[in-house]
Length: 277
Image (cartoon, rainbow, N blue to C red; front, side, top):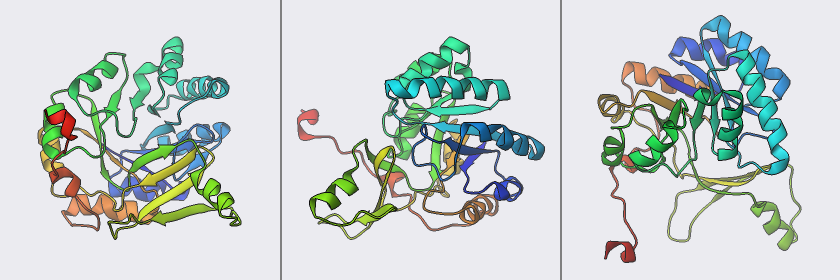
């Protein structure tokens, strides 16, 4: 199954025809870096539109929650449960606790960006009764093969991925420090002193996010991923468009190569010197 983020509801039919099985939207105040953010009251309209096309609907609620967020989290989970939403992405264990209290944990997908790097961690969360677990984005193909002994795993196969997240407004803090006027849109590129590639950096109401310098692509690896047991694949179109996602989906169908890098799959994990003793 292939799931993808979306930018505009008008793209639903084209995404379905291109081979998408489900789309992902974010709920305002609860989601992290999701291209399409909707208010809680809009979810029902999205569900109806998806049902008409035979698409599953998934909701992004991956922000690290504070106490003041929990009432909205519970209200959102209850709304998703009543509408029959197929899945809810989370990263905060408070979300899991609230879902358990209303009997909705079976719809949850644990997506903590970088944390799931072994099969025991994955199995721990699956044992909580959730639907699936999303693996860390930087894992090599050999590492994924080892973890894939655990079922119900999800892998990001295309798109930029987050490599750092801070709740602090780092861009605007820097601008204030340098007496620079703060614009309404805070999206820039970072270039490390020892590299030439640009890393997108974005600040929004949830904090600051730094992304990989290139979008990942998995054209040469997807068959191996399927053979080792991975059955859930996600496409993230942040900094891209729905037309890009449609091209990506077609490329998998027609065995075409699109821009991006698969070098993460073939790099060796380098541990700190003290860990090698």
